Length: 310
Image (cartoon, rainbow, N blue to C red; front, side):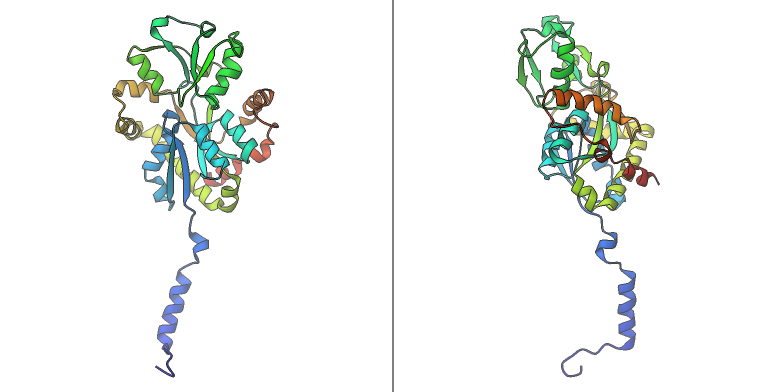
């Protein structure tokens, strides 16, 4: 002690300096906590699996979960900057880009077979045109809802007003398969006949711009999760089946397996996305659901996926 101050020995000073050199500043290595949105139907289950797989923690990522019934709700949360990342199909993404500049960082799956038109079995309907004059439950505002009202119904000769639209939360798997298995409904078509329905992982542009290292680490996790879906499907199915049974769904493993088999999971960034997105955007513009066709060079970020692969 000298004049009330602590004097460090040369040995102590050197030890402290070496320790400081060995520990980089927080900004050089810390990854940002992710606010992950996901939908609680079958479309959101690849994301749910990612969250429960331990892969994010393996890559040093922390996350918060934001579960909602439908992907268009996740999109709205992202536009409001309440959530950083979330999955939904093309129509919801295009609307989200129009309203909030959202960007695609990967394609996670294709789900056209999971979206179906299921009718009450006692009605004995077999064609979409037979829905004229009937009440049709629809996920209004979602990708599924927009495809039905803007594409499928008009192709079957149904105009607005020809049927009464009843708003509902969600109408994709596993609920269709449950209805069929329990003898309640009959599936008359699935959406893959008109749209393969790629589901994208979208991000807010500000999260991507501020946290590129976090996004790249996150995409590395998706590449590993994709391998689990291909190489260890039993493990994946156990995690997802446990989610639905925990929510009270009395669903047999057979029914669940049929529902899950309709989700084609292959995390990637295909090079041919623009033509399909352009077609969807033109329909949304025609229906006045967006203000302009997106600039795809800004809406799509394949560079991030490429860096994650590298």
